[in-house]
Image (cartoon, rainbow, N blue to C red):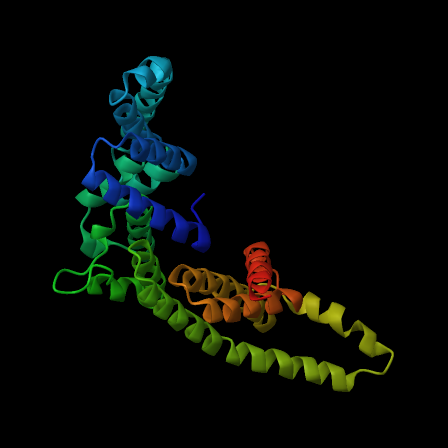
Length: 303
């Protein structure tokens, strides 16, 4: 399962930091150990093995201690690669990449397959898979615009295939490189676009609601809420509105966390408050516990 927005943000930041650490000190044992742990948690078994080897090679005691574990993992990865090659030999490179990652946990194989593919033939899922792998492996240079642009600017040739999702990945790239102002601005664009997209379903939903309300008898008004819930089926205006509010709440949390990273406490407080208000009004969203915890901490700091 791929990481969601908030988890992808933090993983991208950690991956970029580890990549920079190893660029400065290739034999840094702690960095290799952290890479191995991060890749293992994400299910990137081939890349985890590479960093386990590097970490133990730099410290003889660990080589003796984890030798059997590494040998067992080498055997497992070798078998995975063999099975993968046999079963995907006739697939297109992009299809091979998806299978490598999601069925075998071979992120290195997935990136290699995408590198052999023709970018002109990438679909939106292919582009998103490529960017997801670039973020979670710290290889953000694959996403950047060429000089003289700043390194935190997403490549312009990704704008057309990504469409409205361009700003989402621009935010992740900028945050991974510590450009929180650009990341925040991109998230603000996403929120503005999402707010605009809810106007039509909101108007239609409320119009239907008022029509039901005015046609109901006083006793019948008690059934309005259950009837509305029944109307929130997939594809209905009210269902679209509910999904939009959920997405907006999660984006508010993401924007609040970016503001905290930047040290902008008022902006963080405003967005976390907006997310919590949506939760309190009955909108379910995945990041609500995070929003409530940080809002509570900010209130304690304010006192």
